[in-house]
Figure 1 (cartoon, rainbow, N blue to C red):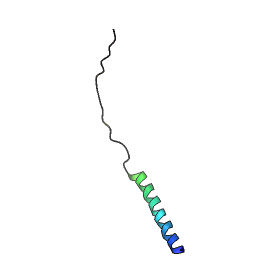
Figure 2: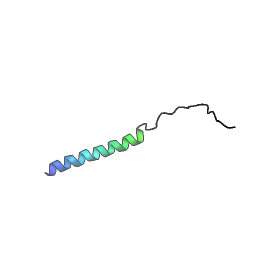
Figure 3: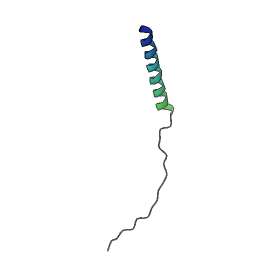
Figure 4: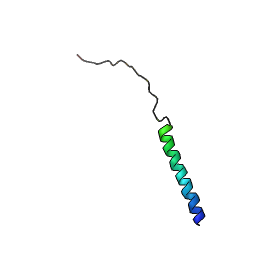
Length: 44
């Protein structure tokens, strides 16, 4: 049982380190582009 807990702890630690690494090194910015559209105002 202790061996299983050690393996589970190691896997959780590895997943946490991977998540931190992805957060710092991964490109999480959305792609951006400029949208220009004329607006017609009905003002009398």
